[in-house]
Image (cartoon, rainbow, N blue to C red; front, top):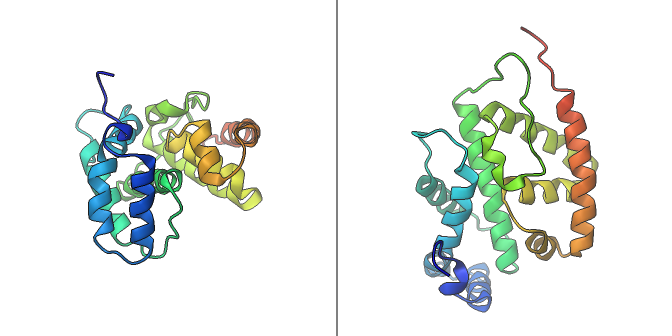
Length: 201
């Protein structure tokens, strides 16, 4: 298919999993061999993630992928499982990187409260301003304390843009369970975020 390259064009799931297993076993060079195979897919996901950011955003798509790589280099304690697990971890890292970036830039909510976040449009979450990203991040932390799996489902779908099937593989549950968790978690988050009204004006 013309257009965006994907991982299947350059590496099989088996190759990726083999390299993850080698990396987990202590092969320091495995990550360097893995990254060229998954780079296009990571870049595609990062581009989707950053799609709604303003032109000139100091953290661009390629920089986001490189930052993920740097954090992966230090990820010695992760018990890698397979391709789905790898992309789930990368999605989590992207969330942390952008949330950390938003905090470091001291973005704050600007009067009038939060604009409506289209949770149904998970892949377009970057349309939310950074203050909204921070609000969602805080709400996810609260959800994690109540139900960690539902929080993970939202994180992977809302921040990572993973499909239902990818999330099911990463969390080792059925797609039906993912859809049920997604529906319940989405309702919970929308309720929590609707309570986010400005305390000061």
